[in-house]
Image (cartoon, rainbow, N blue to C red; front, side):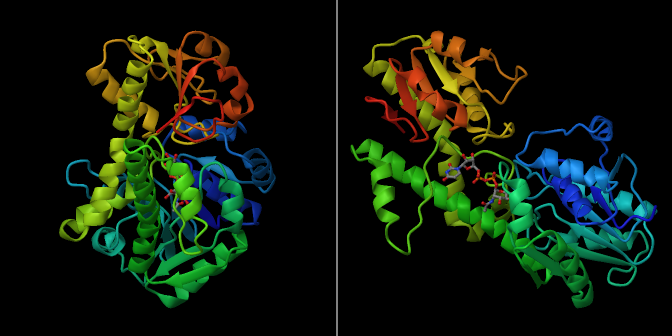
Length: 409
Ligand code: SAJ
């Protein structure tokens, strides 16, 4: 069959993107170098849980979506591979994009469009990807077109957001930008704005930086309020009544692969110009250790000496998802290893396999074994079963527990 789109990378972004284009009548092949993912999808089995994905998958299958570990000849490639940052230089590590683009160039025909959805620091596509394309003998803007279409979907509500969020299409060629925009207009009701590549790259990184800085401010306020006997949630609630104030929530840290990562691209590229961003990232990174300190204070106050009596509820990086990448709980457990003798106990209803020591797979036996419960993640389960926490000492980092005597961060 003739293929319209080959989506490269079938992870949290690439897979739903491939499915949504297939749902809207495009002939799609999804490609991943990981054979297990391809095999599972070809056996009609999704590779992660996400609201609305089963239904979307069924429709895409009916519309003949295919999955393969081979790249395909087609008019448009969508690249959705990870873009980590180098922990030392803080700069973006674009090796996965380069591998994907090189593989595309090995098979594609002249006139193909390569759309990068992965988040990249401003300038990456023209500084790093364009020379790679040219080194293979192609002329960018004639044989191959480069476009940036940064994704914006939030885990937990991806399918809805794919169909409703507005999109940015960055292209240095107006006609190609409009062509790609018209394809994205078919998948979203949210509208599509076109701009140049660098502005699209920058705006995506700024969106996540905005959120990181806003969360950092709330985290700092939580520390100030705790230090001086004020209720940070009461204060945020009041401040947010102001029509031009919208503070986010403090928490045990910032996880996932976007908000704690993307702002570092700016610090890496503009080190002398990024004071607010740098300090904000540091504040967010300090939160798991801060929660650990709060745990020690609460143990002292309640005369509990054994850390084995403390249980963390939640291992994922946020509520109601099964993704634990860079999660605050994992960060906390990592620092705890450096300081404390007996390990904390841990439970998360979304994590079936053992990923840390002392991990429980059943809420009741977890609660039976601990005296202090630290609510790290506000999964629906704990909201529904909050009554089971009565009689425990509770540290609630999510402000969801009304039981008398509950400690806050
Ligand atoms: N968090 C707080 N306080 C808050 C909100 C979140 O501490 O008030 C924490 C969460 O618990 C979590 C972390 O921040 O650990 C990040 O979660 P998130 O829900 O804010 O964001 P992500 O990483 O799941 O998704 C973000 C989104 N970006 C924005 O909202 C600007 C999403 O739209 C992007 O597509 C995604 O990053 C991405 O891939 O870039």
